[in-house]
Image (cartoon, rainbow, N blue to C red):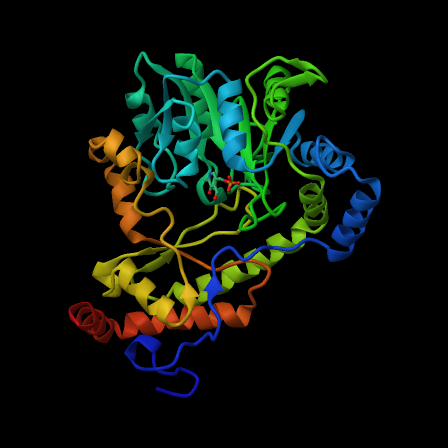
Amino acid sequence: MTSQHPELALLGGTPTFPEPLHVGRPNIGDRKVIERLIGEILDRRWLSNDGPVARELEYRLAEYLSVNHVVLMCNATLALEIATRAAGMQGEVIVPSFTFVATAHALQWQGVTPVFCDIDPKTHNLSPEAVEAAITPGTTGIIGVHLWGRPCCVDSLTDIARRHKLALMFDAAHAFGCSHGPHRIGGFGHGEVFSFHATKFFNTFEGGALATNDSELASRAKLMRNFGFSGYDKVDYLGTNAKMTEVCAAMGLAGLDILEEFTAANHRNYDCYRTNLDPVPGISIINYDASNQNNWQYIILEVDPARSGLTRDELMGVLWAENVMARRYFYPGAHRMEPYRTLYPEAGKRLPNTEALCESVLALPNGTSLTEETVTTVSSIISRAVENAASVKRKLAESKLS
Ligand SMILES: Cc1ncc(COP(=O)(O)O)c(C=O)c1O
């Protein structure tokens, strides 16, 4: 080992990074803008309830996404609950299991049954054939997820929904700044839901939004996010509290101004990971289609143990020992988490591609806080782990025994 390539921590060296390097460190918007906006919010003493900053962000987002309506919410989970309810989804709704569990929770929380459907192993997104096969007389809707910001089969799902008279919603939590061909994600289906959580490409600390061209859906969602109030003393719907605060909206405006900087940093890091990791056997990074716009936020590895000599979990063990906190998104699959594991114990039988991917996918850090040097160092840990696969395996086996 040279001094440039010290011993892996798992094999007796010291951790490469003194502090944990997390997946999803926030991209921070223009500080001057956020500080100015927060000052104005405090002076105005209008902190929430459809304030001027939230309204401006809704206007700017609708313009950016080229949609008629954006309804800001306090997070995407509540936005999904409201959007699916406002779209009349009940009974059974078809969703992927290979997603963050919130996609299913948003339905189950309302007594709607998420019917887990398998994905295409190449795209990681819903397989239209599997969706069609999962439709029953009880089905009222489909939620497609644009996983990693890669658009799911929008055209086929739109066709299926139209033929079967189903509501179609997209969970676009990962897909802000992405497109399907020339069209920005945001305008497909009856509506699309974005997450602006701190870990996302574009954040409002916590936040989310429904984007739609359907005016009725937008007005129902607006009422529902504010307890159903249509006037001071008038409630028209069962509602909840899903409003976005002014400070959160200010963070959004500050980020929106410099989205291109976020994209450029992510893209540079993605290319650097590719250059370093493409030659490593058994390690592949997912592709982003050049005919779409991408936010390049997700660095997703697929680990093939037959070629790399290591399982995904063994590679993760090596990275964690170096303080690189790579994540097994979305292990073990929503259908193997509670309450779904107990409620739908047979679901896995229909999900072979989901279960296989849950064993092979690993997410690496990306974002504006990451330098190319750090990316190169993380990549070098991975290539050395594969070069030393036999010793790594032995070490991990020994530590399990002791
Ligand atoms: C695919 C997907 N859907 C929904 C959510 C929920 O978003 P939020 O944290 O804004 O509620 C997330 C969050 O990570 C997600 O990844």
